[in-house]
Length: 410
Image (tube, rainbow, N blue to C red):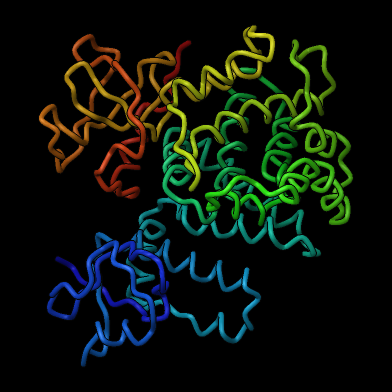
C-alpha cells in the first residue's frame, strides 16, 4: 500500500466518500462510500492525527472529488479567497499528474478547463481559449483516437458533475473522426464542426449539469430553458465575438435538421446534422441520476436510422468512425468473460478488448487482451457500465489503446 496525504478541505461533506480514508499507518478510518456529515465528525475521525491519507490507487477518485469541490464553490459564488484556500497536498498533485510526466494527457484537467470555458461567457479571450482546447483535443484524437474515445466514454459514464463539458468533448471528437476518416470533409470545415460541437450547449451549461444530477423530471421553467438553449447559445457566441455564419448556423440548428442526404444541405446544416446524431448517441450512453443509460448497441442503432427509419448518412458515418462497440464500453465474450473495448477493429463489430472479469466472475487483476475478430472471442452482448463492479484505472488501461489503432477497414 502506497499512502499519500490529502487535505481535509478536499473532502466533500454530506456525500459518499469516493475513496477510503486512512491514518499514517494505513489503518482504515472511514470506508469508501461512508458519508461524513459535518466538519466535527471529520475531525473525530482524524482523532489526534495531523493528516489523513489515501492509497495512491484511489488518487484518481480523490482528484475528481477535489475538482468537484472547487466546481461547487464556484457555482455557490463563494469568495475567491475561500476558493483559493481549498487546497490539495503537493504530494497528491504530483501523484495525480504522473500521467503528464509520462507524456499521457491529463483528462481530468481537460474536463475542468472545458467546464470553465463553457461557464465563463464574459471572457474577452473566449475564442483563443476555445481554439487552444480544440487544438489539444484534435492532437490527442490524431495521435491516439482509440485512447481519446476510451477516456471520454469512460468519463461520460462515470462522472456526472462535469457532464456538460465531457459531453461536449465527446461529441466534438466523434464528429471530428467521422468527418475526417469517413466523410472526407476539408480540414477547415472539420475545424468549424468541432468548434460548433464544443459550444452547442453553451446556453445551458449550468442547467445541463444540474439535470444530470436531478432525479425529478425537468420543471416547466427548465423545459423552457432547454427549448430555447440553441438560440441562446448563438446569442452568447455572438456576444463573445463569433462571426462565422457556418458555426452559428450549426449551433442554431443542431436539434432541428430534417433527415436527408448531406450533399443537399448547406455546410452549416451538414455540421448540425452530424452533431445532432452524435449528441443523441452520447446522451443515450451517459447515465443520469434519474435513469440508467442505454446500451452502446441500442444507442448506435438509434443514431443509425433517421426519423423515417431509413439509414442516416451522418449516423452511419459516426458508426463507421467509432464502432458499434466503442472504446470504453463493456462487452461479454463467447467465453463468458467481461471485457472493456480498447481499440476499434477491422470492422465495426470486431474491436480489440481487455478482459477484466474471467468466466467465473472473478476480476483478472491484470487485463488480458483479446481480438474479437477471432471465433473463440466473439462478442455476444453489450454489458451496462453499472453492472461492472471492477474499478477502472484510466492511466493503467490507456496504454493498451495505442497499438494498431489506425488500422481500420470497413
